[in-house]
Length: 570
Image (cartoon, rainbow, N blue to C red; front, side):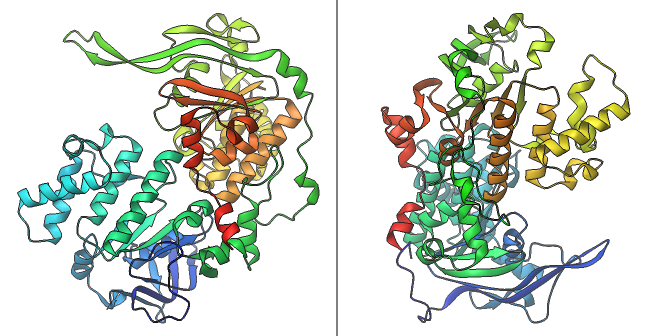
């Protein structure tokens, strides 16, 4: 059943999956910790049900335990708990029976297909292997079915993709392969754990349409785990809201999102930038609502800075070699940025939006000197950056999408944040630690935690460390590459509030790279839209996003999942 057609509460429908009173404890060095408390949920055939909540709420742990994927010596299920899938008692099944169930009648789609797919096998071979492991068919039949599945995933050249390795495919294409693999053995239940979190808005829309279509055609039940309430509003019949290991609210999607009863659900909705005035502080989960926060943030002598550009890109082109002869000389090039011209004023936020492969990140890398220019010029304060000295270059700093990958896992937070201060200088350990404590306070971290390594922090805290590192050398311009895309809605709100506060206090300019249109609308003064390496539209943020002139911008806006349709229906 697709959104709007789910049965009324109490209507008799045999569930494909039923979880009753699931309580789970983890055994660790500090003893037993209860992570799930009396969780109950159910799915009927053909139904798409959302399971939402912040990171650490218990969503993924619940999903993993449905398939008994957690180590049993550490994850202990209470005696009162029951998990039934297709009428079978999951907690009573042996490992051999569970292996037969997994990938066959029950499939799982993971958040990051690059880690779920085998990097040394062609993707077609991996799907064929799944089919033959669970069904008595020949290799030839399995291959034909795999190509047909890839074609059903709206892949234009399924034979080429069949023979490709995972690293040769885009993120959206890899996720299509994962969906094809999930449906390959005609499952009755699919558990999709954040399947679109890292995808741009147009690819996300395509993946969600595929999930809906395949669920409708095959009658497969889908448990969609996500922190994106707009996605839930777009595709789910019903929704369960999790908080601190418990289900705190459940019901039809339009009821839960349109008329939330629990304070936590209300807080999640209030943390979304959608519908809020631009440049205002967002509510965060646990924050006291303040009506003064509805007014636009006080500008810092920003407007004067807009007249004199802080950053100018003039006819910038970036290209990468894509073919080499026997001597290693390039035969051809892929143009990633094609004659782009933009400007950014002091204290201003210019957002660059577009789908994966449009050239956004290549443009950002060129600004900070990580990618050389094929042609064109980048000026900072009127000076060509290729002639700039080290002191000038320090005024431009970058914050990357994934702080886990950009922070040294061996170093404590204080050393990470102060590393830029040691370039060309030898400050004392005491000086560095004092600077780190100041940076912690600046980005909203407890200085007492600065001796911890990155893995001891949450995703949002790691991003604060990354921002603190960028601020250590007192920059005037921050290049932010998808800084909130991997964060749940409340942590995203905290980071956006931090960025707005820092801009208001220090007059920072932001070059903000993102595919999240709601975030871009909230934080931006101006927007540039990139498509196939070119800027196809730019201007005032409200004008570009509300009245787009270019066909691609209109398509981009149409692909954005929206809460307002659900709220209107409720």
